[in-house]
Image 1 (cartoon, rainbow, N blue to C red):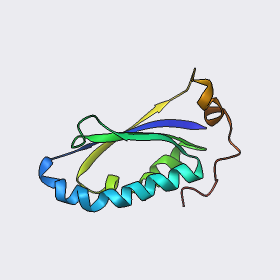
Image 2 (cartoon, rainbow, N blue to C red):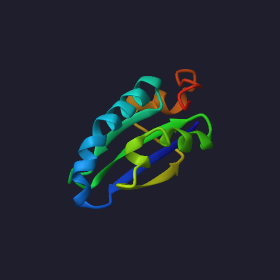
Image 3 (cartoon, rainbow, N blue to C red):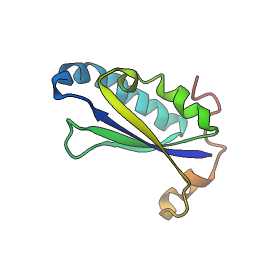
Image 4 (cartoon, helix red, strand yellow):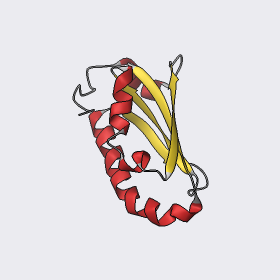
Amino acid sequence: MKHHIIMFRIKSKSTKGHVDQLIEKHKDFLKSGYSKGWILCSGTLVDKNQGGIFVTRTPAEKQIKIILKNNEFLESKIVDYKIYKFKPSECNPMVKDWFELTENVSSQFYI
């Protein structure tokens, strides 16, 4: 499995109306990721007008970019985002299975 932290930042406060239009689609995208097992957690930055993060896993590196292309919020021009790859070395026992097991991740989640 490949693990990532996706961080996005809203480019300008003047786009708040556009952010509001896309946020429900973004939430649906996240719900889908949770149900398919490739998102562990997500959240807004402390200042909600700044952006947010989510932690993901995918079977192959190229799949994260394919997945993100299906998120209108991230693919819009109102946010910048960066993908940080990481290799888990330790974790809380409550999430250990999420980082170690692969059978519960859909092989079709990126389509």
